[in-house]
Image (cartoon, rainbow, N blue to C red; front, side, top):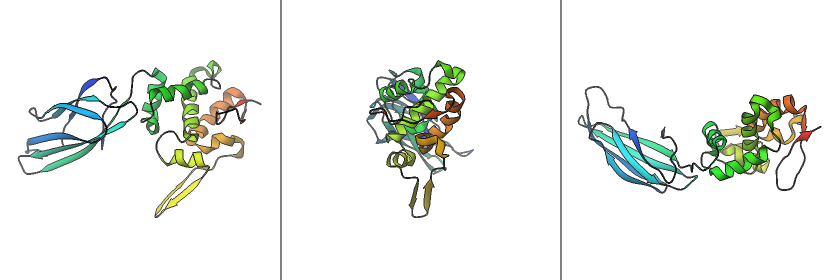
Amino acid sequence: MLKWSPKDPDEVLDYSWTPAIDTGDTLSTATLSVIDGSVAIDSQDDSTGILVAFLSGGADGEIAEFLARATTTGGRTFEETIILPIRATTGSALANTLVDMFPAFASVTAGTVDTWLTIAARTVTSTFGDDEDYAKMLLACHLMTLQGIGTGEQAKLAQTGVSEMKSGTISLKFAEARAEMGEYGKTSYGRMLWPYLKAYMGGPRVMATGTYPVYPSLT
């Protein structure tokens, strides 16, 4: 599966696909079709031996899916699934960095990510020094995961409090966290964040604060 770089809904951009044709064989035809999503294929061309498609539209937060298909003069057929995250560029630079670093939130709108980064900023401040941005992203990811925001089983399990799930031959289990981590031990993001909280806050404690899942403060 190929992943193209994100596109803003208002942008019209060209994307390319090169099938892995064997030496001595040549491209006959190459086409791109939409499998899922609201992105439009404005045009496509394969005359140079590479499929180039101009794409427009899409909805902020969706992940468009395409099927690229090529045939060769030697009688071969190639197919590849391609995904394209649609992301409005109205979000902050840190929000864009977050979804690039943590793909589980690629389908979350920039506005939502920025909201949780703002909440995280109430805990992670400039006292974290050079680690401030990274710690802020980890806390935002942790909080979103606890709310079931994002993709993957981790969000589902963390939100329900389940630590292990089995389905057929598949078994998924969270790594056990030390009791002192409290709510932070429920997600991988919280566990990655914990050493920073210990280093810069001298040991956080978990407390309820209205609608926010967790809000640490100095002990």
